[in-house]
Image (cartoon, rainbow, N blue to C red; front, side):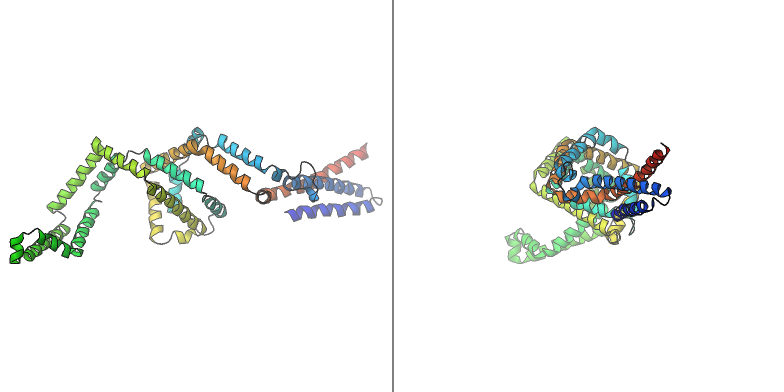
Length: 398
């Protein structure tokens, strides 16, 4: 577009010279000359104005030019202050988030992942995700996650989840897994268990050699019992295990002592540096996964992972309760981040802009709005020419 604007300005200069040479032959060429002359003035004025935003015109240190490079720090501070006062106010964030069906949009996106070429904002998303590698941002995400986890009454939630799993029969694979684990553990450590049984059998049994027979009988009985429990869904031991799980679920929801123990465990886990490292790694893995999805949606959504993601997206669209819960959590989390880390986010924006050199910020802004600015030059040239014709006509009339 810059070439078109400059070419139009040169064309007006050539037209002016031609009209000036032919003006004496016919009065109409006077209008052409006036148009071209005023168009050159308008085009040059707008060229100067557009250029002065980003650099010194013709390299001359004219006052009040190269406005953006000279004021980049002030621009960064103003942008940060604008974000803080208009976007990072908790009440504003909560009100805006309340109007968004974030979970529904996420569900639609996951259920129908974008095909190649449909992700129009891919480059912007990649740039944003790459920018999220900043350590301070990762620290804010970790602190916000820890804060949110710390507000959750974990024991009742675990009790409700366990109750729901029992009601839907999803606890049975867990019991099967425990039975299988016990059987494999016994088999892998059979010599150790034989030795332990023999040591507790008593000296008389060891002297008569019956300790080995006893160990064999005990282990065979255990293996047979495990096989019976594994094969029989109605086995009494399974019923005991289910009764124990149901009792645990009830205690998690109603027993203050157990709830206090779970809360102490939660608080101790939150204070453990290992959890912070795990959350940092989780954030980085999630960011990298999003990057891969944005760069190549088809590859990221292939296989079992893609099927699981699509199923989750369909569940989000069907389950109103789950969607409301996710939206409520997102609203509270975002408002909490704005309240607790708004100043840090503002500082991050301001420091980032300050860290850019003049050439970087000039290039980025020029790439973002440069095409529209060149249209200003074109419009200035044409409008200036029309004004010149009007002035010439008024001159003739007068």
